[in-house]
Length: 378
Length: 261
Ligand SMILES: Nc1ncnc2c1ncn2[C@@H]1O[C@H](COP(=O)(O)OP(=O)(O)OP(=O)(O)O)[C@@H](O)[C@H]1O
Ligand SMILES: [Mg+2]
Image (cartoon, rainbow over all chains, first blue to last red; front, side, top):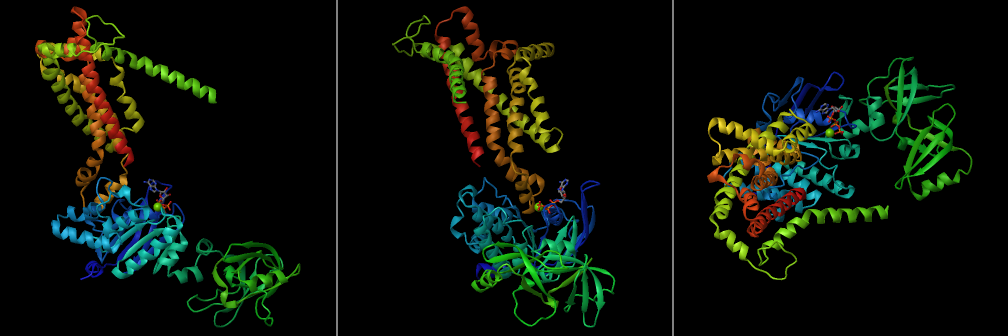
């Protein structure tokens, strides 16, 4: 049996967090937080610094006693089990390898605590090290290997115990960019191979979007939205999520007309505000009644520049205020009558750049597809 | 800027010379062939060392009293000091700063006072002059050093390591024994060496507490200065310098080792 097959015998389990709260003081508290992680799922907690990601994870791991709520693993209460008997995998940002033990001894630590017999222990340590690609480094000291290798050892140290749930607290943020991207792919591949139920904490949205099956966006100790990366990016449900994930034009507006099939006219706030045509897609809910406040979320890449087609819906002439080259992408700030400054972006291709240059000092035609305008509560 | 740093270096060199000169003189005298304390000397002899090891009182003072007492009180101080440090740091009773200054106190109280006090108690209990009274007194002197060194070592250990151990299945006691204690070893060794040196070179306390059978080497040297005073005491002192010097170097290596972890 290969190392992978061996390790795949891990008990998979689902996690349920129900109304979890943790109060540090009358001012600082986290929660209530509720979310489910399915068997074999890679679930991320994403949010800015201080939003309660680590606190949530430490409550699950048992290092923090929740003030309220409950945590269930595979349907059984977890929050009443002492930390050392939860059998969960946990990887810290700081790796936390034991400096007085070799790499192999580090990986074998949990097995030796469980009094697993020496031969069996050696075999499982070797398997776990092979799994993370460090088969030859068992006899090194933690100080003698690189940061990325230390991270892998920390991962192997947890995985060797075949935990039903793996908790990762910003495990990649101490690595440099290149290595971080590489480890990101490696971690995800490993997680899929093992079918390992995983909760991953990060403040890096790229990381969360790239790796997760689903993610929860947190802010100020509360969950703002839970969904797949695509749902979170394309259909944010709150202003915070829209602004936090990627870049977005958020336009305050009121519903002017409501048509059939999710079609609506949206009057942008401000003097002479234009009316934008909106066509809500499947799963975006119903259009609120006319007169109610709403905000329109438009991703910069959905603002199409210099389109020569016939005048369709939502077409304007705009002045270019600012151009920013970001390498792969170019970002343009536009000004059009009846609209607040609008951010647009496009791939920095030769034709796109030429089109932008060709405008001279004049205006540019801009179009926004009605289906690319997303509504959130105002 | 540059001028002041040069001046500082000169000053530092002078201070070092001032501190080390007496030691150097003692060592040179111990190798001189004449009974007069005269340096410089070009001749070299081991006469005084021969005499030192020939005299039972010196020999016994070193091998039967000073070294065993220093070993016993050093070990005892390490045990007690480590327990105290762990309790103080872990209970969160004392902030690091408070702890440091509180345990500076015994270092600031003249040990001659401690000696006098200990003598009064021991005399009343009728145990003055016994070896373990001396061991106890020296333990008292050593404990603050151990608490400081081990306390600092404990604070420097990443609390995540203990959490990692608990996560991997250790109870908090197991986590302490398997992770914290091994990492604390260098600090404990350093503390033990401190306590050993304090005991090994103490005069003030032993002056009061030592009895006829428990005269330590420093006390012998001390009384010899009064009664005869030939370079044998220089040889005795040079031997002490050797022991203490080796220990200090060992300690430095240990501390460096811990820093590199
Ligand atoms: N031990 C503690 N005592 C008091 N307050 C705490 C403690 N730990 C965390 N907090 C507070 O709880 C809130 C959530 O902290 P937490 O560490 O969970 O944030 P985080 O999302 O992990 O942030 P980061 O991205 O910076 O790691 C913060 O306001 C923090 O200051
Ligand atoms: Mg955190």
